[in-house]
Amino acid sequence: MIHFDNVTKVYTTQKRPALDGVSIDVDKGEFVFLVGPSGSGKSTFLRLVLKEEKPDKGRVHVAGKDLARLSNWKVPHLRRRIGCVFQDFRLLPNKNVFENVAFALEVIGKPRRFIRKVVPEVVELVGLEGKAGRMPHELSGGEQQRVAIARAFVNRPQILLADEPTGNIDPATSIGIMKVLDRINRTGTTVVMATHDAAIVDSMRKRVIELEEGLVVRDQTRGVYGQAY
Amino acid sequence: MRAQFVLSETWIGLRRNLTMTVSVITTVAISLALFGAGLLVNQQVTEMRNYWDQRITLTVYMCNDISPAPACQENGPATEEDQDNMRSILDDQAEVADYEFLSEAEAWQDFQERLGSTNEALAGAAQEGDIPENFRVQLTDPDQYDTVRNAVEGASGVDSVSDDQSVLEQFFGLLDGLKWAALVLAGVQLAAAALLIGNTIRLSAYSRRRETGIMRLVGASNFYIQLPFLLEGAIAGLIGGIIASGFIVATRFTLLTQIEGWFQFDVALGTGSLLYVIGMSVILGVLLCTITSFLTLRRYLKI
Image 1 (tube, chains in turn cyan, red):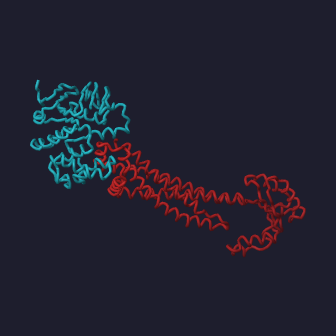
Image 2 (cartoon, one colour; image 1 turned 45 degrees about the vertical axis):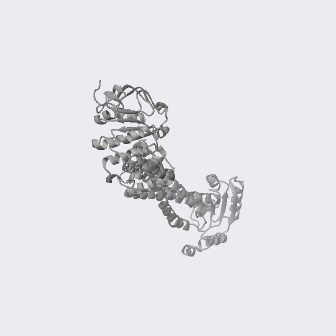
Image 3 (spheres, helix red, strand yellow; image 1 turned 135 degrees about the vertical axis):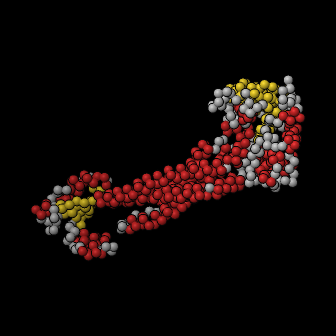
């Protein structure tokens, strides 16, 4: 599903590469934690998957497509297959829960009838039934992140990228968020989650890829956050 | 594609930047009005030129008792011989299409007919005999004026040779100057309008960066992301163009009507010309705004 082949990315403002000859394979339906200190290259990895950046060396394949050969006007179609969740939720403050989720479908031109059918289903899937009419500021952090997940998942992407989704949320609420991500993973969606949250990584026992200074220093199935070797 | 969504986004953008939108519309309206006025004057001059080119005449005045020219003082009034001589000169000229001879009585009558109704003071001050007998010469090609003039000037009994063109050229020159002044001013204004539009769209893109960021992320097409901004520019341009059309129509019915009033001939611009000028102005306004918006978006809206 995601295939990095010896990928190097250097930002022009920095000497040290953000990713240095990284090769990673993520299969369909996998749940992967991406761990490592700040500046280790986690976000660069996610940005490369979205084709927000281009690698300086190596090849990136996503959902069977060689991104180097993907023309710019086809990038939106790639992104429709990828859902994104961030630490800061990125909800639209002037739209309620339903409208925030529906926005993702409206802007890719889905018919209104389809939106009215699909959005409530996804809102229920993330555990927000009965709260579709609430505005973002009326929700707790955990609930806001659920809305963001619903928005990322409403178009049924093949891949869900989560960049520290629990970074702004207390540990107890984070467990709920992880349950939602796990539920989404069980539908067959590949989930890649960059995180600093050791407790969560340890409790989930999923595949862990650790990056340090742009290098893969550990790739472990059913791993933990800390040094387990 | 959902039209309603795009239109509501456009409307939000226009309303959020209301002051900027108003200034854009004003600048566009003024610049297009100047542009349109320039075009109108241009059309009017072209029309008048065509009219006169077909009718341009050379008038050869013959000597009479009161002619001030030295040749006339010396030789006295033109004789029948001089008239016949002139006829044969004109017959020989290839550029002469036609000519007619007007006696003093006929010239007087013609003068009264042309001016009597509109300028009684002038008609009253003149009398029969003030206008000498003359030859009205029609040319096949108005540009060959000098050849014919050289041929008839200095012939015996000729007082002076005058043509309509030299008088009209001064007038056309004035109108041309007016036209260029309007167009240059319009150009400067249009440049200012373009900068304003760029700035407005930049503000608009900035204030909606959250929305566009999410649209990008969930895979909205570039066209879909840009369309509300482009429409925002296009609508401002269109409204500016419509206001400018009002100014253009006003120009047509005040300034040009006045100019036409100075002539005794039908040189009025038709509705077709007016619509052409309005159409050109509105199209220019919409294109300018849309293209500027597009160029601005390429810089400030990362796709």
